[in-house]
Length: 95
Image (tube, rainbow, N blue to C red; front, top):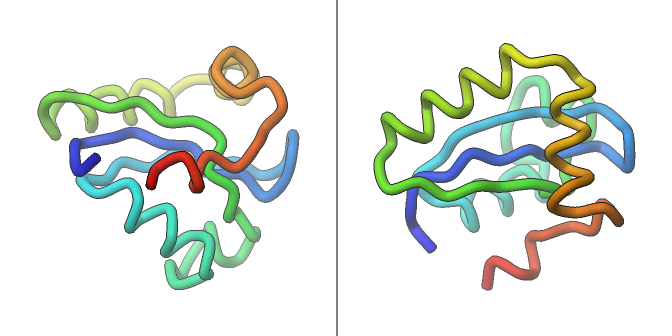
């Protein structure tokens, strides 16, 4: 699954959210889980992969990331709830 992807990691259900983009979601999700990414996600404990979408090209993924980041928290929560209503960690499903 090494396609461009947009993802949301969370500290807990309804907790702090971070939206990102990557070309290798399994590796990036692992880095968040292990606290290897300095900055916002490490500071706020955003380690649970709760939402993701794959794209054919990186420019498409980046455009979607910008769209999501520009949206409200309520819209981000709606995305997560639609795909993952129990807020389970999707990391294990990447392998």
